[in-house]
Image (cartoon, rainbow, N blue to C red; front, side, top):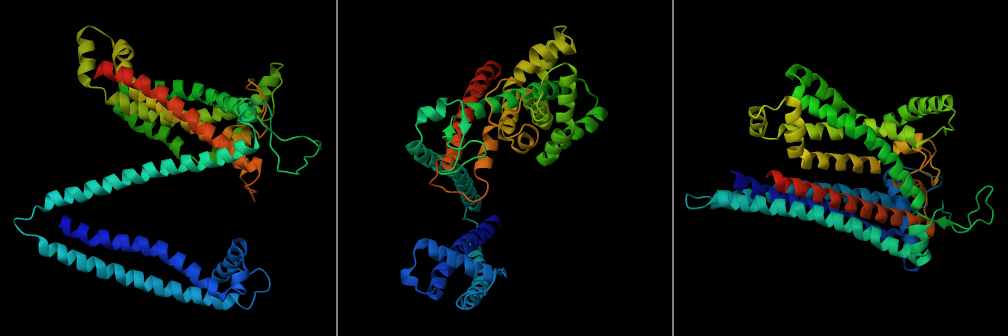
Length: 417
């Protein structure tokens, strides 16, 4: 049965994928016949005409419509309707024919299970290939744009510069007339490190201790209540955390600091880091709890047989054995903290200040990337291209972090395997 189903579905799905991608390409070529003065149009003008047609297709109107747009949109709708019908009936026909041919091939001598396993293996392999190619594509696209950026800005200025003040060519900021744009990445990475350290200092102790309690000390009743409540934190939208940080935690941090005679910014790394730490507690707690529970009970029983208490067994046996998984959980939490944007924007600000004081306003790499790429962009500008350079540096930092984490995991895994 599985053999027939797979042979019936896979060709139909392949046809659906090819047709869904190909018909849009064909329609775009066909609709160019409606463009006035087609031979005199450059690529940008063709794209503008295409947008006009699609706006008419979608029922979007921006003033008076040119006479040729309506027939082009009507033709597009006809093509789309015909294409949908052809794809629908084509998938059904292909599925039925292929399924019938596959069922005819089934016989007592036919090893259907082996063939099904081969098909599944190919599907799994293609899925892995898609993931790998996607990763390679992301890295290469970022790399190529970064190379273009370094053609405009010296690499040493970007890598070791202490000031971040990007501007579009000819842009003049209020109060900074004549200021040259500067692209030093150090302030953003220091801000990212500062906020991440605050977040990790909150999430790791709280998350790890709660995981140890739930796995080794809590009763089933307590565990059934506390663990779901902890995991609810992972489902809260980051914008909610951002509002909480901006409206509650930041004023509290500012008020408490000023009561001690400290100068605290209304937007600070400490406020953003504290809330971000709460946000990533479930990543540390839930994953660490699962890892601790996966430690073989025989190790605990051996420690108890030698006279160890529950605390001694947990501290000297269970935690070292579970350390590879705990490190992986912490790395996942750190990666989540590094990639967070909304909390930083709302609670830490957008100022690229080079400071190690958590009471000051700072920004992070991801926040600057979002800020740079918001709105209409000029992709020949150093300012826009700097976002890709920041992204590449962030990828490199994350890879280095994961490399050292894997070394720790490998060391302890060899010890306890």
